[in-house]
Image (tube, rainbow, N blue to C red; front, side, top):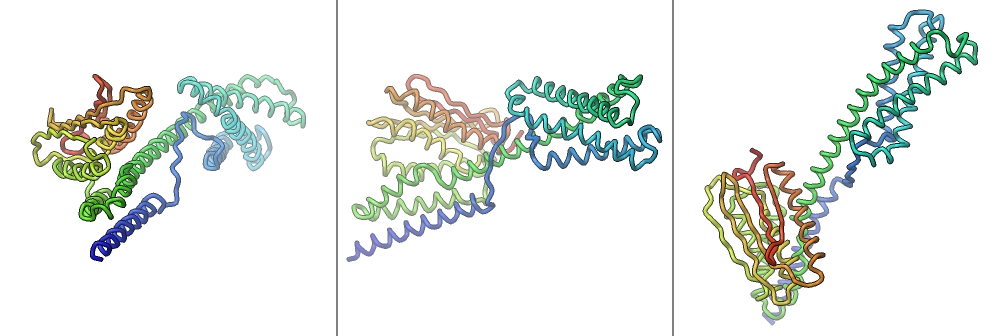
Length: 385
């Protein structure tokens, strides 16, 4: 009876832990109700409402300036009519150029960045010339001007193209800078989201829960210890109080994770530690080692029937924290696929390091002598130099 009560208590505790984890995931990832969609195109999307609004506003301001500096009675007898005609012409040019970029953006973004920029700029000037030519023929048709190609024909186009070159150059620079800032912001948000997901939903959780469920009946004491380890590990994963932790704390947390993996892999998993001495100032982002070990186990130890040894070495060098994690790779036909997955998994970790350190942190992964070697270098103080 006592064993049955303990099994029931363990199951209830595991279920409560899962409910807490699910609630934290929902709050952290879905609380804002936003989806991060990354756009990596060089030219921005000119079909959006905010682009059209900015173009219309700038075009109208330009029309007002042109009307103010233009001689009176040049086009019509009143300033109001002048503003109306100039506004109509400038808005044709502005909206025509925007529509052209919107339609051609897909093809322009296939070009190298410099060629895409030159092509977009040339397209805007071409639209300016075409609208100017159309305006001249329209004014001639309604008998506002004596001839479509008068003495001032070349000066008219030259003035239009000059103004267009200056204004369109400034607008293109503005939209490109805003698009670059948006891409950088989304990239950082995506990296932070992936870092949060790696904290909340690591791969080993599902396997560890299955192991705990099987241990509840066969070895309740071991199952209770595993649940306590998982609770401590989740508390660390979900904690936002500390972004940087001492090296020793990170090693201890990783060993808790390895204890859970050992329940599943048993004697197939062997870990050799080589941790040097670090000063108190040596800190690293929370959960730096755990994903590296998880990656080594997923793409190395799990694929080997007899298991293998994961080597973990940490040392200080040139005011940086050096980490080296090695694991054997299977010598089978799936080797190429597994190695590719190995590298792709490291990309997520590399993106997380970059969001915190920028270019000051490095992560490389190579296969040599039947082992996959992941090497990390982090600033020892935990910040950008």
